[in-house]
Image (cartoon, rainbow, N blue to C red; front, side):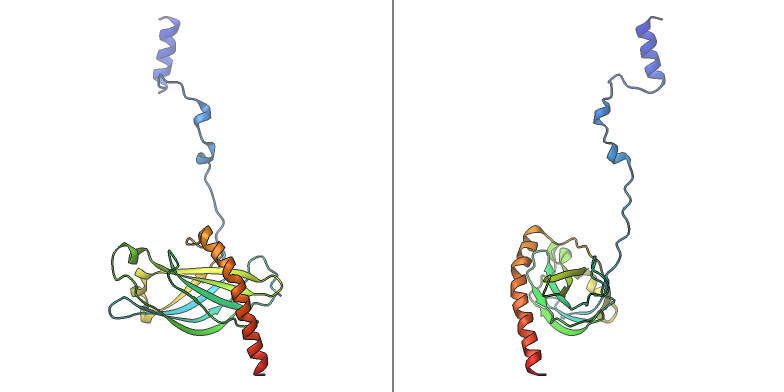
Length: 204
């Protein structure tokens, strides 16, 4: 057996192909398992969701939130919570609760109705309600406490329409253009909060 024949025989016995493998083509990151730490909830949000008979409108009651924590902020900082609700994707509907002062367990009891919802098809299957919980602060404007969401197709599965959602500091629905839009709305919200404070002072 010649040296060339011996070399080919050794390659075939250990399962190597005739084409050399370039080590630079191997992505080592894909070979290393990735372990992400669990996301710690920053509170709970209790809601009641009720469909109309024709499924084209949805009544939403934001009942309360519990155990709110502002991520990355000392626990002795007061929480002044409010909730922003969106129909996603696309944000075709928006709602904002009033701001409640110095409470981690706010009782909102606010109701709104989303009308003209698609009664079938891909849009209704992809649609969801997203609830963003914020804490208002004049010095640093506002802090995002966290986000909770529920798909519209899951509303029928709720017992008596009530659901308790975990609030977490992440969301799958936010987009860059939506974040820019939020920044533009922030100034308007601050003006609304100042008006609310003036009304509170006026009635004291």
